[in-house]
Amino acid sequence: MLSFRTHVAAVTGMDDFDEESVLAKIHLADDDILMLSGSLVDGSGTPSSDFDFCVIARSKDERFHRDTFPREQHMRYYTSGDRVKASFDYLPHSLLGVDVEYWTAEEVSALLASHARLYAQMRTRARKSSGFAASAVDFRLLSRLTYGVPLTNAAAYAELTAAVRPGEVAYTAFRAAVGSYPDFRDLAGMWAQGDHASALVAARKLGVDTFRGLTHVHGNTNRNPKYLARFLARLTLPAELTHRFAELNAFGAGERDAADAVLEWLDLIDLAFAEIRAGREKAAAFVGRTDFLGLLREELHENLAWNAEISNEYCFRAREAEPGLPSLRELLHAMTARAAAPHHLPLQEWAKGRTAPAGENNKSA
Image 1 (tube, rainbow, N blue to C red):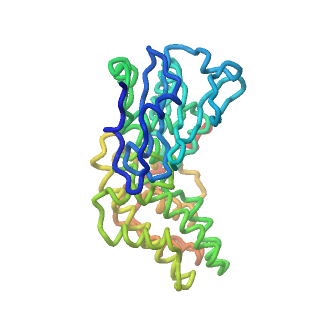
Image 2 (image 1 turned 30 degrees about the horizontal axis):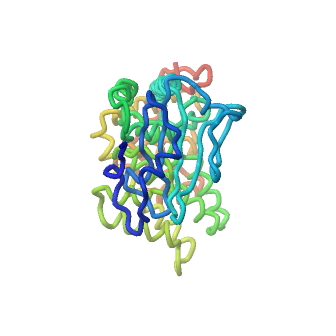
Image 3 (image 1 turned 60 degrees about the vertical axis):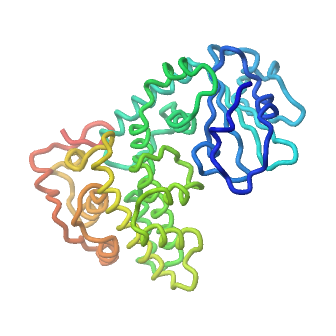
């Protein structure tokens, strides 16, 4: 009998389950690749988590169509037009559920090829990117392929997923996660108005995004923020960092004044960026410090209207790779005063002799 129990991580309070009852909800064919993944495999699960399976078929069959999908009594299923993509069911007398996604080998291969193109594009960018929306990459499935366990047809699974490179997946996740200058600029605008409560909301978002990025530097490929605290707890990080983040993120400012809480968030984000700088130099798939600064340099051109805003933007953005820049507190106070925070980045030297960028990639010629 097919068994997967040994691949499920220990979860406190988890109900017992019958493997045969779980597998009966999958509608497996003989030549399918069956992959087990999800939070119950990666160790972040709870007693109400689902068993997450992925069926990878050689080609579409009756399970992929709305009218011929083999329904069960309590089953729900997700479709896009006629195409059935997933089914969902619950185990009786248990908080546990069973989720099954349906893919073909051709679709998985196309997804991996799309991600390879996306990764190549991400390596040419210094900005936070939202390129996933147009990339044809289902990042949830992509992440699961980096740690999923094949329960059937392991050889075919290995051949199909040979192009999966977890480090590259982590980098594209990082590039889409790490805190962005527009978010910090919004925070600064709220701060300048004296709207510290709204600034605190913005600071929390900036902090969560940056800490998500930190987990990706350490190889995490899961972009779901609900597991962030659990992923951080697995990393070897200074206790001050993880404890302060857990307190601020989970419990909020408490009795703190909102302005004080914003500044505490900024200090915490500075610490996270320091850890990002240390970690990314050890991550082979990440753009290193020198190359990253080169990407920043390529964006600059000599007829750019230099002002405090431009200087502060690059001061913020360079910190993911460059040490010794003003703290976010200092940058906030400089922006509130409509001034440039002093830093050592040779922005105008970088721009010397460059022409204005052409096209939409924001790079100088």
